[in-house]
Amino acid sequence: GNSVTQMEGPVTLSEEAFLTINCTYTATGYPSLFWYVQYPGEGLQLLLKATKADDKGSNKGFEATYRKETTSFHLEKGSVQVSDSAVYFCALSDPASGGSYIPTFGRGTSLIVHP
Amino acid sequence: GAGVSQSPSNKVTEKGKDVELRCDPISGHTALYWYRQSLGQGLEFLIYFQGNSAPDKSGLPSDRFSAERTGGSVSTLTIQRTQQEDSAVYLCASSRDRYEQYFGPGTRLTVT
Image (cartoon, rainbow over all chains, first blue to last red; front, top):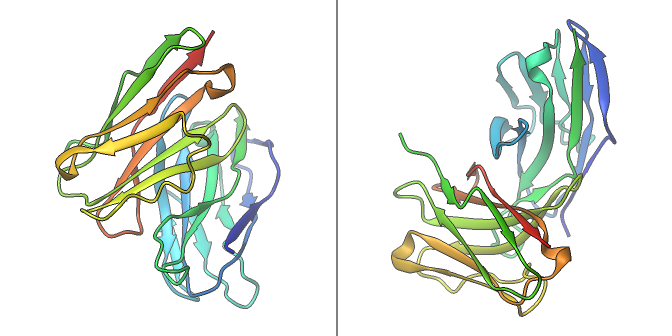
């Protein structure tokens, strides 16, 4: 079946540091890949997505590239801010999985950014 | 435009009582999902509605959990005879294109 594996958190950084949150996946077909962000006390929000190999999703300074050869979709940001403190979820949607459109989510990675 | 809304935002109930959680999806979204998020845990899929098709209930943890979606819009998740392990945040999401999901703010359920 499908699965998403994220690096364990929390990730603790100083403001303006470089961020990488690793995400790898297994899927039976050609999934679309997503990063969602959950700020404290809120629901998840889509941060960025990529629908095919070599696509790069980007938003709010965050980027992730769909790497089919390494089955990865690592999230990066060049200079984090305190306001980026949140939980980040990697997810995939793979309609090849018997026609189901139920996404598969990673366990989430908590990011804490200190001033 | 209006996003996904959920009510109540917080619910405290006694063990053994029934609770109903409501989700109002984005207008025009045909897919609706319920998830459970326990403290420090990821998302646990519960149930999925797509248009007028029969729902996918494969994630419901026990027969105490049920959900319905009326008129292809509002959904209610019902938990009967609540247990302490049911305490969690219940998230609802809707989707138009079966890929990108839009989440509500969640209902925090506490069973005492």
